[in-house]
Amino acid sequence: MSFSDKIVWITGASSGIGKSLAIELSHQNAKIILSSRKKEDLELVKKACKNYANVKIIPLDLEDYYNLQPMVDEAISAFGRIDILVNNGGISQRSFAKDTQISVDKRLMDINYLGTVGLSKAILPHFIKNNNGQFVVTTSIVGKIGTPLRSSYAASKHALHGFFDSLRAEHYKNNISVTLVCPGFVHTNISKNALTGNGSPQKKMDSATANGIEPKRFAKLMAKAIRKKKEEVYIAGAKEKLGVYTKRLFPKILSIMIRKLSVT
Image (tube, rainbow, N blue to C red; front, side, top):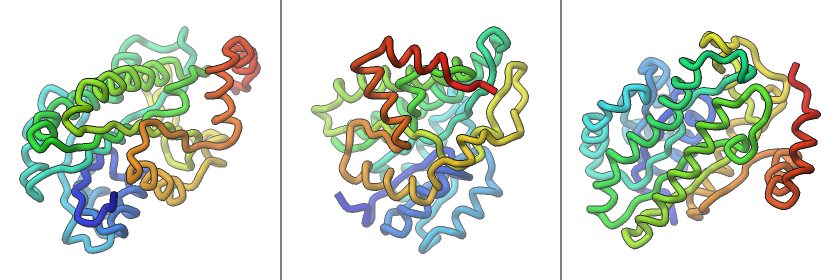
């Protein structure tokens, strides 16, 4: 599959992975629709894209998941169809479960899970009608492995795997594919914006995130996985990938390893 003339809708496109993916795909001649809550930041991303006349902006709030259908209709009308929906929008968390207010758990699920599911369900009839479509979902290595300080975040990402694995099986005959992209540490502001136990942002970058994969490199690897229609891909460092396979083959050993992680 080539991205030339493909129409790709990216959520969480105002920064980080979403921004870098938009720029990368624009250089591969895709037509792009950018979405997030921050219209001003989306305008800057649009200007950074190649041939920004082929880039449209549709602000949306995933937390308002009951009211996403008008945005889907607008996205479809922008270029006449959608080929690929990249569900990249979301928020992270940094707090112990015992210190995390239930309102924070709910907000993580509302944005990361229900917002993504709501948008995907709204566009699904369009994919079925066209007998073609691809859902790309930015989950996380933490969507495979629960680690300290990320209980709510891990839960929301695990939930995405369950939903989209089922959706893939249900709509295989409709030529609809699902690509689950599991990042490890990526050098973005995700940890700065992560919610603490009372719902306020952490406002500082984790050292592991600061030393993570650069978004530009990540976007090239993600684009390759999308183009090949991979079902699940881990774009992460060696230790994070090792954790996934250890969980699969030696879960008790991984539990011991996770307990020894630094949480300061």
